[in-house]
Image 1 (cartoon, helix red, strand yellow):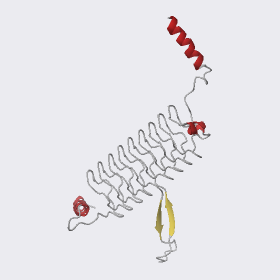
Image 2 (cartoon, one colour):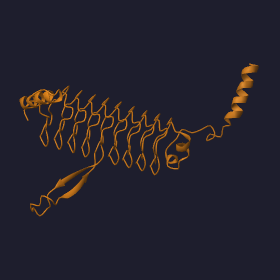
Image 3 (cartoon, one colour):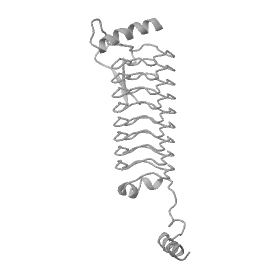
Image 4 (tube, one colour):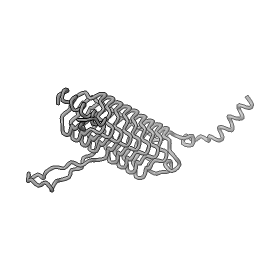
Length: 266
């Protein structure tokens, strides 16, 4: 697609969004937009299903409610983009940059690709369904808002999610192996069955999170905020926690009494 063609489609889409005559919803379905610059464009509700956006520059792009189903977003720059309620099922975002992106209520669950059977027969009502897992591995997603996002079964291995807001996010069975979740707000998140092996959770807030069957083997949890239920959960005990005074053989109560006496006596 040429830049001229892109701008023509964007112009009609702008009219579509403002309900002006001649407006047409932008469709980039299965089109190749690799390395193109879409920065700052308003493409809310546009259709990018199956589109190739490899290395595309989409900084400050408005993609609210857009369909990016099974799109190729590898190495794309979506910094500060608005992806609220976007359909990202089955999308591949390996190595993408999503710093400070707004992804509240975005759908990143696995998708399904339909294709004709291998024998090549033309059977419009008979297809093989192939599940495709959404991938966000090795991505940089610092400070993004993923509140109430749907991330169940998502592949998030080795990504940087530092300081992300993930309140109420659905992350059941998500693979978060070696992912950096330092400072993340995970209040009320569903992490049932999630794999957090080797993840960094320094200062992360897991208050009210669902942690049943989650794996925390080798997870770094120094300073992680846990409620009473989470603190007693067997799953959490697999992580690496900061040593307590008791672990060091210290009686903190006795030490405080002695310190108080020292203060009073000088």
